[in-house]
Length: 328
Image (cartoon, rainbow, N blue to C red; front, side, top):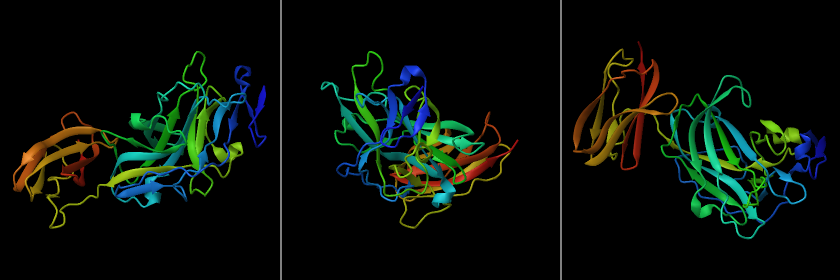
């Protein structure tokens, strides 16, 4: 059975059980306030980072209640000027939510996922989950839409050569027996974008693979997303007014243990840790209060596979990183 996409008469095939659902685009509304970006690196594909309307979504045609919807953006980090490892601390995403039953206070289960894309180009290939964050409770019911900040802890580290895929997953607002009947969808604008917005809705609209909105008849609809990253430059040393400096691991590459020197210039709480190529923390070499002076830590990669690793020194919000290769 076929069903029309509201407003644009584009047809999709879907199971008969969901014939009452269709992709909908909301008309433009008042501008939605955006959240300031305070990170060292802000990565976006949007010409304007202010959403102006609720986005395209699979929804029940009779009521407007949204079904299961996941929105995606793909970022080849090098093409966005990233040249060193970055730590994804948060994502600001356009989100529109309204309720129909008058008693709901939140939309449970809205999550932001970060993936590493490997193999074939997105939406093909393989996506490996690197981080996930839930919608903050204090902004769980944006009545007119908003840019909502999803914060990642721990924040995954991505290399400049990697491809990041961002997904915002919204659960079914019209599921059988659901008491939280709602219209929840991306916040978007039509100001332009340098990369496509993708949508998937396996249950509601039988879109099982992330699909470019342009191919579904919505070429100008752009989900607003800003990826906030700490630019953890591979900095061996630091400015003289810095609290810390980080030296080169010796030996590098290493067959066994490597010594990592670092300097504390102002007494601070220090954390020195090692991350693998998937952004997982695999070792903590230093964690605590350190006096002013030169220090060393030893990294012994027992049980860890050969490959590239990032070691990261943090003190009072200051972050330095460098790279180390393990061989066997």
